[in-house]
Length: 315
Image (cartoon, rainbow, N blue to C red):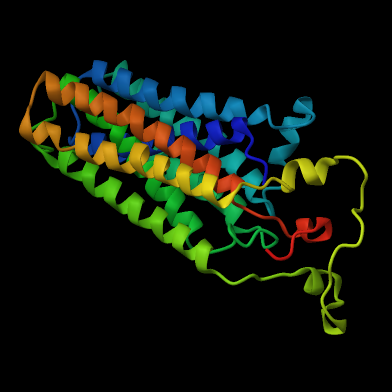
């Protein structure tokens, strides 16, 4: 599949934003985050800015941007519509949560929990857009949804950690976040490696013979291309990446997204203060960059069944 930068940025930025929002909604109402309105302002501004920037970038992937509103109309059957509805609906409790925390000095449990549930629901719907596509076997498997949720949690924690370094964690939270960060990184890394191992070892689900229904007659191969020039199907679904390039990008994604952030997450235990602050900020930047590379690979390595009609042997 063609790795559109607007969709990659959307899933990366909104995933981090929703992950951070979910953590704020769950922890703050129960006194596990600083009650300081300035902390609430900074943390919520970061979460909502990432979410909004991601949602706006997704519009650039549309052919007719003026018809974007129609994406909300098929919520009964389309995960894309459900994602849009969940994303917009989450703004309401998130806004009430922020107003109470920042301007009224009162953290609403109901608004916080609803905002967290909306954030999780939106990320789930995003992952189900890809999980539900049977013509793309590398997406239509049980690894996709856990990966999306784990990466959202990881990047949310990576950006919560530096804000806590600035404002200080309340006694109730103590050293919980510094412990949760490496755990979340390890969990996301295990799920990502499991996904890659699965798609590398999974047998082909479709061939040119099964796609055309002629497999019983012998080996089916392409005699002539259906089109003499590039078309939409080739542009969006015929993207391919060499195995050695994919392997190199996987190593980069592991290093940036998991390896370096995991090492930097240990700094707060060894050197509190400014070194810990610098390390947590660097961890957030590197982790997000690594997820961006991972997202690019998620699209680039996927193969749509339609490519069987354009010479692909199997998907």
